[in-house]
Each structure stands twice: as C-alpha cells, then as structure tokens.
Image (cartoon, rainbow, N blue to C red; front, top):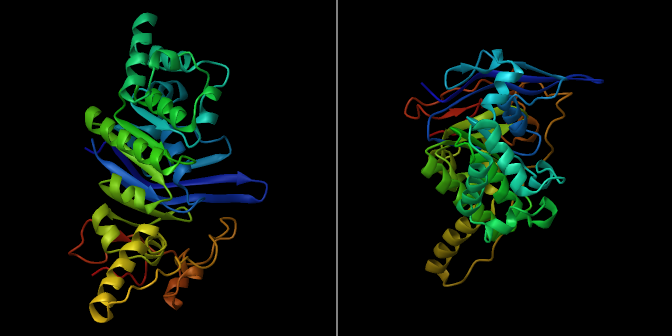
Length: 342
C-alpha cells in the first residue's frame, strides 16, 4: 500500500468573479521512503495541492477527490481535531518563507519545544534537550545560543534550518518541502538540499520537493511530476523525464535551464572544435513564449496549446487526458495529443 494516494483531486475557489478551478484531476502516489519532485511555474497548483494534503485550505476552497489517503487513512473524512494530530506528527511541511512561518513573538527554542510537546509525551527538560539535538542535526552552530534567538535575529539560511528542525522533530513519515531554497544564495541552497537528502535517508521518510527549478528535482528526487495550469502534464522516473522529455512544456523548461544550455553548448563546441578548432559562443537562453492562462478563462482543450509550437486542431477539441503513450514506457505518463515519447 502506498503511503500517499491521490486520485482525481480537484480544488475550486469560490470568488466574487465566480468559481476558479485551481487544480483539476490530479492523480499520483508516493511510497514509503520515496522522493517526488513537483515542478512548474508559479500558479500551477503546486502549493495549493500541498495545503490540501495538510488540510489547510482556506474556507472558500472546495475540495473533491475520488481518493485522498495517507497511510490508509481517508483524509477527506477527517475532522479538524484528527487532522491536528496528523499534522506535524505524521505529515510535516516546510513552508516557502521561514520568516513568515516562524512566530516573531517567541524564541526559536520556545517554538521547537512547543512542537515537540504537543505531539510527544515528554517533559519540558527532555523537549529542550531534543530541540538542542535537532539544531545540531541541521547544522546550526552554537545551538544553545540559537535556541534563545528570535526569528529576526537569524539569517535566511538559519531560519530555514530551524524550519527543517521543527518539521522533523516528530519524525514524520512524509515531509513536504515547499520551495525550501527560495531567496537563498546558491551555496546555502546546496547545503539545504543536501541536508534534506541526508535527513530523508536517516529517518527513512518520504519527501515531496516542490520547486520551479527542474535542475533541483533532477538531482534530488526519484520521480518527477510536471504541472501546468493546475494539471499534471508529464510524470515518470526523474532520469527518464529529464533525459527524454515528451511534453513540449517539459522540453521548454529544460531548454531554459542554464545547466541544460551549458551541456548543449559544450557538446556543440566539441563538435565544432573537432572540425575547425574554433570555440563556439554560448547562445541566449530560450524561453517559452506567451503567458500562463488565466484560470478564470481557461482555453478550450489542452491548456498549453496557446503557447505550443506543435499545437494543431486536435489540441483544441477537449481536455487532454494523462496517459501512457508508449507501452515500453509504462511508468511514463503524458498529457499531450502529440507527445514525443520514443
């Protein structure tokens, strides 16, 4: 049995402009100890999906699903009191902005100790010792002093490490990391991602890594899920999707990534050098034309067709289905009328 099962999940917001379908027909599973990378542009439904799993959707959100279970528990039927026991203890989340997620009125130590005390029956002294050990585990220097600090006294990297310490304090089975490296410099980003990988292995927990950077998920996930306009457009094993993308949107994201462009430039330069001995200049990074569709006025048919160079009449006739397009790629699914899966 999978740890997390999501089948045909849809999320609609009731607004003054009418209903807005932010996520539709989302289906995926996550096994124990497995890592899933969810990637896509801002507004594609990544964070909203996480909030639905955590039971933290706002009141104007309407959630529908054929199945939404965690470790065999039906999340759709849980009452708030039961959800409070689940959150933090079995499912934990690292939010995008640690400075907003941490309470500025309480010290770091008070917040970590409170998290431990709520979910675990231990004394305050033991909770303090556990908090100290957690800060050590996430690589914060002088942890005893940092426990006394308030959030505004920490750097962005330190605050993110504190959020990770809080999230793993009850040893959850699933950790959702929502843009865990946003606003951090490249060096700190790498440290945080390495830390998450190490903690996942140590605690044998499942990890959902949410980001807009395909390069991040390529190095830190077992499988990948590419989202666009609230839909999954491509999914499968990470290496397979990254090396042989089938959906035009996935291809566009990869083409615009600096590491992908550098690799392509090096290959071209090698070929040119072999012929002429000259070095070829790097090209400008390509971008996907157009804009993400307004969810209040979705295009008919494939949501990506207004921006797709391969779009034809068949792409505008109805909602594309996510399915296997080649029997030899049973673990790959693509939502496209003209996939390039070989």
